[in-house]
Amino acid sequence: MSRTFLFSGLPVLQLIMLGLVAPIVSGVARQIGAKLEGRQGAGVLQPYRELRKLFQKETLEPSTKSIFFTFAPYVLASTTAVISMAGPFLATENSFSSSSDLLSVVGLLFLGNIAVALAGLDTGTSFGGMGASRELTVSSLVEPTILVAIFALSIPAHSSNLGAIAAISISNPNLIFAPGSLLALAAFVVVVLAEAKRFPVDNPSTHLELTMIHEAMLLEYSGPRLAVIEWASSLRLTILLGLIANLFFPIGLFRVGQAPILLLVSCLAFLIKVLLLGSILSFAEVFMAKLRLFRVPELLASSFILALLSVVTSYFFTATR
Image (cartoon, rainbow, N blue to C red; front, side, top):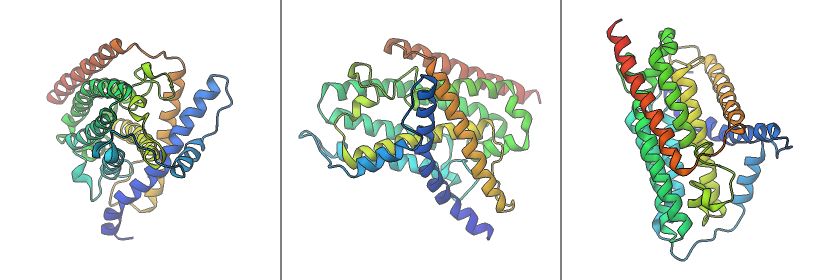
């Protein structure tokens, strides 16, 4: 297998693997949560069954819908797919690596949120507008924290490219346990909970409209479009967990130039790390209560402060090296 072919094919391989694994990650998180709560659970393959059922159903649309409602699911899915192709999930670099700049990745995440929020407003329902307002409020606090937290990691790497950040951590393992990295990790974990719509910011399984954030914007969706949104949401969770796994613990990450067989090791390592993080997330959620909406900005502001501290600490330790 030539280096050029491998370099060019990695983005497609990453998209296929993450796209197939994403429902399993959600299924494992659900199943572990069910077991911890004393329930049997529907099994780790339930998300696949739900997607198959939704793709077979009829698409119903509100009479007030416009182009925003129609194309929002595909914007969300496409922006998430681009991140899955460009990010350092299986390898530190590939033919899409130039698109995995910090600003590009955060911008694509935010674009997906905006598309769904506009679709919620487009329906003209009170719950859709309420969910869109809450979603944009949370996103306006989450995205800056992601920027600042990963910027702290970019200081020793002298690059804002996510692949370069992962590569420098592999070359210098001591950076993984540096104070700046640990502070950035703490901030990043909090914003991942918010961005993935998990406890204590949002309840992904609620059916009470007044407590919804993300789900409130999807009440008018059905059929294949809802399936696309559900798949994209699972993929976003997998991507966020993958960023934690490979930016802060880049063990087993493939580097172009190594033996191609090591790419299989990288796939296995990524799967293990993401499922482990998903399990930890589900375990923690069982012991969390959903915060009141007006307490969420306090939590996200705290994570932003941690991210700022990580930047200051990283600058200090880099300057004294």
